[in-house]
Image: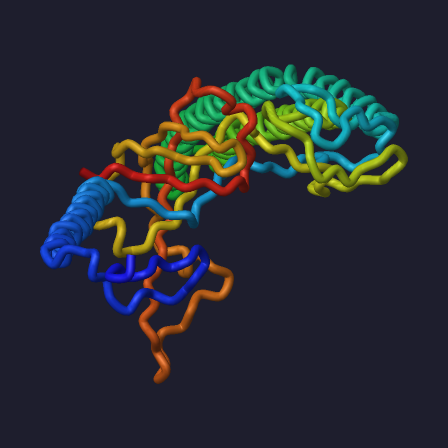
Length: 409
């Protein structure tokens, strides 16, 4: 047809200059279909934005109830197993990574020297007991002899007093006889002067007076001697009474010294027995052996570390939260702990907070009193206790990285 535009051949990129066969009303209809498509696209975008906002809001509402950190790890008690006595290792009964029970023998030391020390301690105890047995009866013997000495001194004082009283009576009698003889002598002297008495009678009266005077002088000397004897007896009595308690106390002190020596010897015997028992180094608790440094033939000293013992049955989590995260954290709040090594979660509870930030416990704490101070957010160690009885807890090890999430609301 001559009046119609020719169709474009297949593969021809050129568009026809004009479409006389297209009706003029078709062009406005295609243009009318474009606005609804754009509206639907905008609607989808708006719905997607709302969904994202709702998801973000939900995540925020959920996340605001939790505080988490990736600066956390599992902690446990890792003890150093050491010898308590010197010796040479003659047997090592464990290897690295071996599980042991409390009381299991880990290392055996040569007990020869310890057995000799035990025998010496037993001999010292026997010697100390014999010394106590010999010394103990001396206390009542000393008490008896001291009491007898005091009684003898008392008896001597009483005898001296009796002798003194008798000497005093003898002196009184002698003085009375002397006075009588003096009176007779004076009367005889007067009679002789008046030639009323024979000179022979006067001589007898004079001799009698001299005898009585001599007897009085002798009685005075005896009295002085008895007084001196009494003073000496009193001095011995006082000395006996003072020495008696001292002798008993001295003897009792000697016995106490012997008993103290016995107690010392018995204590040394107990220590020797303990040292012999320490020849076998045992596990102080259940755990896993690691970092073993002792071999057969090594000489070890007290306190020397032989191996490390990890108590895998008593584990907890130490989480270092930022100081801005612990405002709402309290002891007793539930925790969900994700263990990276096992890809599983464990339940726990916030147990306690550290007494200071981690930097204060460092070997070299930071010094903030400087002109170049920069405020740094500190971290506070938080101890989290894991609930027992959860699956695969025996696979947990100290040092494993974890991510705890604490529910604060």
